[in-house]
Every structure is written in C-alpha cells, then in structure tokens.
Length: 411
Image (tube, rainbow, N blue to C red; front, side, top):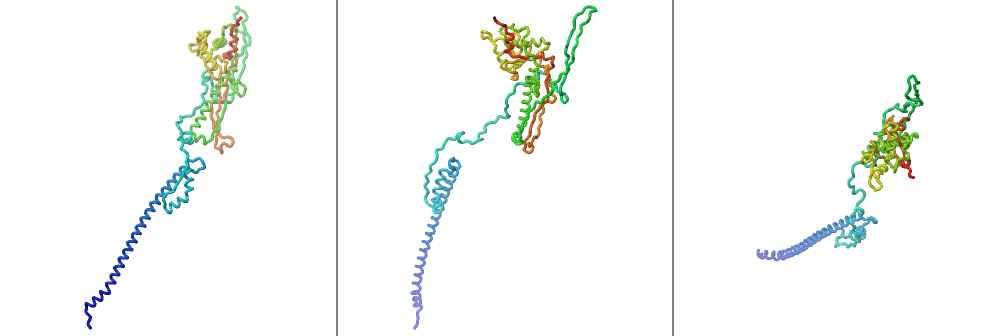
C-alpha cells in the first residue's frame, strides 16, 4: 500500500486548519478583551484625574474659608469666634467627607454683622496717630527778674558770714557861728556795730536713672527748673522776706512807712500819681536819690487808665507820656509787690552778700544707690541788709492809706 504525499498534506491540513482557526478566534477574543480593559483603565484614569481636580478645588475652598474665618475671628469682639468660624465648625464632618471622597459642595448660611465706618474712635488703637510733637518742654513763665540790677550785690564767699559794719550815730551838738574868742560849739557821736547772718535757700528733687536714660533732656530740664525756682524765690524774698529766721530780711521790712508830713490833707482829688510823687519827695528830703518805683501789676494798669471827669485820659505833668517814668524815676511792675502797695527809693542801699552762690549737687540718700535713684539739690547761702541810717532811702506804703493822708478835706 502506497501513501501519496498529497494524501499526507490533506491529512495534515485537516488537522491544522481547525487549530489555526481556533487560535485565530482566541487571539481575536483576547484582543477584544484587552481593548476593553484598556478602555476601562483609561476611563479609570480620567475619573481619577477628575477626582483629583475636584479634591484640589475643594481643598482650596476649605483653605479660603478657614483663612477668612481666622481673619474674622481676630476682628470680632464678642466671644472670639466669628460667624464664619461657627459655621465651619458646624459643617466640619461634611468638609472632611468632601476632602476625602469628593463631592459637589457644602452649603453655608452665615449671619454676619453689618460693617461700620473706619473712624479714629472705633478703629484706631492707642499711639496709632502720633501727630507732630514740638521740640523741648514747656514750663510756666516766671516773673521778670530785675531786682538784682537795682540792688547792690557782693560775692563775699566763704568766711563772709556774718557780714558786719560800723555806723556812726550822732548824739549831741553841731557846727554854729560864733563870735571872736567865744567858746566853740562841740559835737559828739557813738560808733555802733551791726551785722546780718546768712541763711540757706534750698530745694531738691529725686530722679531715677531710668528716667534720665529714657529722656536725655530731663537732666537739663531738672537743672533749669532748680535754677529758675531758686532765683525766682531769691528775688521775691529780697523784696518781701520777713527777716524771721531762717528767712532773709527783704527791702520792704527795712523801708520807712510813708508819711505825708507837711503835705498831709493838702492835695485835692489825690490819686496814685500824687502818692508816688510825695513818696519820692520823702526820699529826696532824706538826702537820697531814688532809682526805682515798684508797684503791683494791677496798680500799674490802673495808672495807665486814669481819666478825668469827662472820661479823657490824663497824665500828670511830672510823668512821661506813657506814665512809666515819674519825676525821672522809672516805674517797675512786679507780681512780687503785694497788691495795692508800693516801694519807692534807692534800692542800691540794699546789699545782698553771696557767701556761696547757686550750687547744684548730686548725691545719694538712704537706699537710693541700690534703688537706682539720685537726689539733686540746689542751694544759695547768703544774707541781705540795709544799714540803719539808710532806711530813709526806702519808702513803702499802701495806696489807699496814703491817698487818705494826702486828700484835701472837704467841708
């Protein structure tokens, strides 16, 4: 039996063809499934990308809400929690789900306060507005000081306390015309020593080191304060000091009280100008030459406002046009002169001796060193005097009393 090659090929073909067809079918099915899986994967990737985008948007929305809530929480003045923050807390669970699983949105209903106007009263805290601060420190004004230029001063220094002097006091007798070979008239006198004792004028203040370091100009301000207060008080007491220790004796206590003398009751419609003119005559009559008239400021003003019966301003012929000089003597107005009083005379007869001039010392007392404080003290040591025989160079008085003395009596 012989097998033909053709038959073998046919036999193989019968076997292989079905297998090939089956393989082809399987390949087609597998490709179809792979395409399907690939589409699913792409769809899944698209879905993931969309979810990621939504998550990012949701997270940004949450961050914006939280930031806004923080800002409003800082601005609120109620319980420290703004309406937005309260709403966020109420929606906390929904926000977490939104961030984790994605979703559409979360609904908020926020009740907010009505915005008010921005104003200095409601919106500006302390020291927000500093404005412009002028330089320096303003202090109260002091009475113009001029007494030192009218009196005599001496800087005797250490060893000049007490200050003393000798006066010749006349007793009896005096020169007289005599005939030839007649007994000549005699004169005698006694010598008398007088003195004045120095007193302390002083003041102090306490300053902390922190204050001096915080305000550099404070030290100079303290020195200026002490200097002005001391010199102001010294001039005041040179005029009016009582002389009762430890107060120095001023010019007023030394001065002679006004006495109209022969002019009493002789001046019609006597006024302030008349009183001052007569007071000057008392000084001239005692053989002294006045250099000043002192009155209080209100009296000086009333002198400028003097009018006649017709309401016309008038000035006596013995005054200057502005009334500041009477019979050649200048009028000074001062707050240191007691109201309604006057002082006329040669003020150079008053001598003030500085045993020690103004000194400013710095030191510690008690626990100041360990408490970082210092005491700053200012002092003047000295005395004033008028010699007994020169008291007539100074005349004092009260205008109302002196006018009553001068006024011509009416019948």
